[in-house]
Image (cartoon, rainbow, N blue to C red):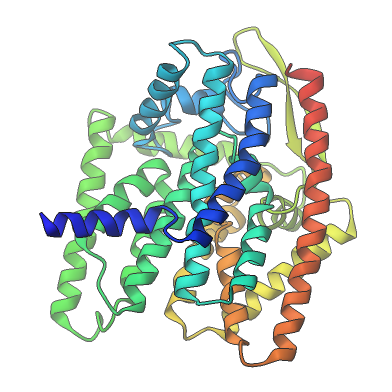
Length: 425
């Protein structure tokens, strides 16, 4: 019983705020995002409208995700998770898909993103051991990203993927820092939840395992690692096949259809989509464009998409941020925790920038990778902790980026609200 109690307390300490500072961070963002999400849910129908299955704003599929979890080839086990989300929201709303239903969905998203920010803060304080002032600067910076703002009220796979990846990244960092192996139970659970919500993220679950101490120097450790990885894959594959009644041939056909659909857009140069959408749009809002949409059942509605950047200041912002990230990677090349973060990010770069899957709307995939920015910036600060001049330069640069980000994203959110006022009251 004492063992179970110890594990339960450790789990709660991992997920939830456990100090007064962490509680203050949690409450601050919960209130900020809560006000935003509550206002949208109670006054507009864009969070959930039963007539609009997809693409009401920024290509998110709110209604389709809430009702079914999304397509099985990309989100194999999300169906079960969103069944719980939907049924809980219906319970709160008395079985009606009304404003209370939308409000519940928004608050569940709000709590998920706020807990994600707490995970980032824990990592910065407990793993990197940054001073409180720098850690707070970085989470304020992260909390103002376009992805975190939008996902704070959006019931989508990306919302919960961002939380799960942040939790797993912090958990594995604590294990690697103490030269401990990642338990098989944790690996299986992470594989089923993270890979189950979005299948491409399954590969990220195995990255920290490769950096466990001496696994390539000790045959016994290597065999144990292979067993844990194989067990995770077997459990995931069994549940995946069970979900589709073991009709495995559907996976390849559907995957090919999705790839063809989301990788053949040529209207914007690739370099611009990479900067404006993948690297930029998930952090710094560009301008928006309104498009005509329909649900293929006779209902027409307006959708909102992001445009490429039109300002040199926006391109400069993204370029400076990427330079800082690359600087961090080169400076901390021998740091295994930095390698884990960087490889995770590289997987998304390959999928979206090299393979071009969804590159034209890659800003919506920010929930898969935006958490790496504050963590890598944190490691960059740590690398120069004993060099005051360089540290001051980094702090000053980050403050300038933060102010520009805050002003820009507040302005763009005002445009978003004008869109809601016009089309979604």
